Image 1: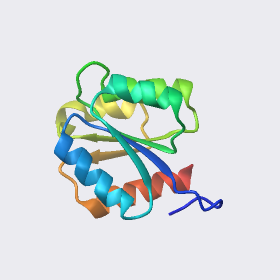
Image 2: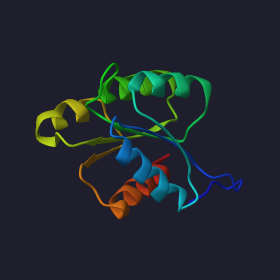
Image 3: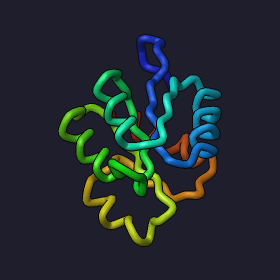
Length: 126
């Protein structure tokens, strides 16, 4: 999916699992998304403040700034940024996560087509 200008959508993926970051980056770049990845919430916040993204895909449980914190900050500082929350601790953090109103919630492990469906869904909303 591309913007009307022909510019690929810019996606920021945040997770402290480097294997997952690499896999997600490869999947999404295969569909012509422009993807940047970082392993910490603090690095994500720095990048969000210096570059523009269409979608933030963030793990919830991370050191320094959690995904919950990133979602909250993104709503306040970047109101047009769509958010997808991902977690392997769905039973424990789902209610807290949904209180932060991400645009989509996805449980780990997920398949590549599930992530693509989530991404296309939030981009249609935005």
